[in-house]
Image 1 (tube, rainbow, N blue to C red):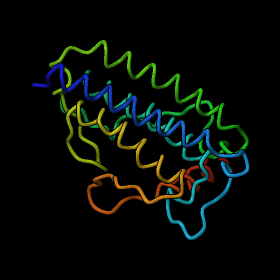
Image 2 (tube, rainbow, N blue to C red; image 1 turned 180 degrees about the vertical axis):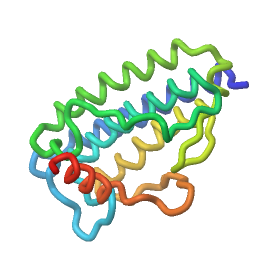
Image 3 (cartoon, one colour; image 1 turned 90 degrees about the vertical axis):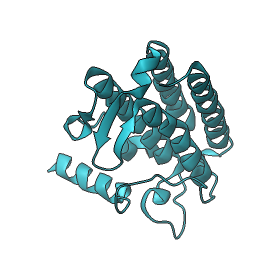
Image 4 (tube, rainbow, N blue to C red; image 1 turned 60 degrees about the vertical axis):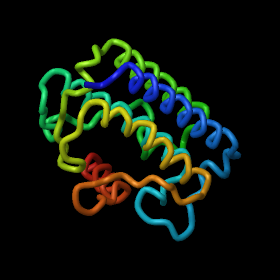
Length: 186
């Protein structure tokens, strides 16, 4: 069973990584925040603004995954729809770092409220994702700060020391996003 110390450590790491991410984003000029990295692939091709929008969308989606696990132990996350936010990835470059940071802050406040409202036993519930396999709620929540660390490094133009543990090959989320937007427009 998850312990109070593990939950406290989770929240501490979430706070630390999010603060580092936001500091990295705020250190960029508006021009740099819209710059496309050279010779990058997949998500690393996103501008810093697109990275922030992606994190916002993923936090909202991860929250939906956690709620699914709370509702049904062993929940199949393939049935949970992708969550949208006010500034999606494809619109991010038309906004400012501060607009996206405010969205991330609001989303994180929701996530922390969700965590604070959970009994310890809830952290051991599970959900199954086609991309990541079976994880406990605590493991899903740990992915929040790891995801921040990954994209914070990318925003600063560095290779992250964290890479998600995908089942099989990592999907090209940038390409998937372009295809999704094209289908929406059709």
